[in-house]
Image (cartoon, rainbow over all chains, first blue to last red; front, side):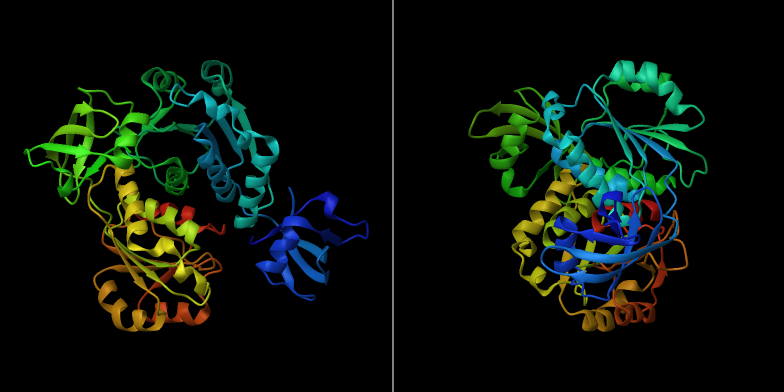
Amino acid sequence: MNLILLFETDFSGEGHRVRLGGRRLGHLRDVHRAAVGDELCVGLAGGLIGTGRVVSLDSDAAEMEVRFDRSPPPPLPVTLILALPRPKYFRRVLFTVSALGVKRIFVVNSYRVEKSYWQSPFLGRPQVEKQLVLGLEQARDTVMPEVLFRPLFKPFVEDELPSIVRGTLPLLADPHAGEPFPRAVTGPVTLAIGPEGGFIPYETAKLLSAGFAAARLGERILNVEAAVPALLSRLF
Amino acid sequence: MNLILLFETDFSGEGHRVRLGGRRLGHLRDVHRAAVGDELCVGLAGGLIGTGRVVSLDSDAAEMEVRFDRSPPPPLPVTLILALPRPKYFRRVLFTVSALGVKRIFVVNSYRVEKSYWQSPFLGRPQVEKQLVLGLEQARDTVMPEVLFRPLFKPFVEDELPSIVRGTLPLLADPHAGEPFPRAVTGPVTLAIGPEGGFIPYETAKLLSAGFAAARLGERILNVEAAVPALLSRLF
């Protein structure tokens, strides 16, 4: 937690004072080993970043006086189209994409996504938001990403994808593609990442016909947790 | 497991025939749902890649006829100097660096590495090798990385590091550095990555005096699991 993310409900009514309990209190005490008078990096969800000075701290709550004075880091100009990964990886991928600055993720089905993954409790709104918040706190960002689930591949690709890719460079990560992945692009990108084993030929064909270009990072097949930061860091 | 990594001890004496049990058998049956006659990607530890044809399969063992005909992917020309991460992250980082093609990793101490991390069972040789093998199987590689533990920072930096960095570009990943991280370098690199919270100023100064240049990937602070693929994918 390199930043403590604050929400409107944390404000105790007295202007610039927030009151924290639960996970954030535990982290302040156990990891930061904070004491009264310490100053820590804080951010207002969806808003500015600043500093919080600890004014009281006990086993029930921490109170801080906060002021906000600077913008969060710029978002990555990318929309991610991600085949639903195995649930335990999905949690970590949410954390990572949030930390990397992705602000819109469509989680889509694919033939190679096991049906049971769609029933996982990790897809629940609170579980998803928890990982996104932890990612923002890691990277000192305040702007929550949007995570949109699309359990039907064909209608998503046919009906929604055309307007998503408009004005962007649509890229499909594919270890078997002939073209290398581009570096340091300047405009917005729509990046599609398949499941373990890749999209099936029908799905790849649908994406290509929606304007995607297949490109490879290298001949090594990476798992999704490593592929996401590797691809985004190459692109931007 | 995109490749089944084979060791000399898997060969049953009859030339090109291997016999597999345990984890690899389980994976063949449960994930690949392999049947007699199927052909799967195999690799000989430290050697070539090829194909294995399943000739028998039951609950005790799988037998395959193997032939090897091509080289594994080239290694990344990098030596990694990594402050020991929290043990549960360390396991995953080992998997990732192995998949990415890193072949030499020095795991070093830092003031901000908790002493207890050095006592973790995840630092044991079998646990380390397990993650490295899984990483190679993910990326279809056969060449095991070397992982070397250096629990004393100062003697490592003073006595060993000079010969490690010789002939390489020594880079220190530092989110507070002024210089951006270079892209697509051509020669070998020595890449140092600090602990959560970063190297302390004394340690950074020691690395700079050993020839390292500090460079940043961006203003976002990434956790080590995301930083490693992001940095390596930017560099190579």
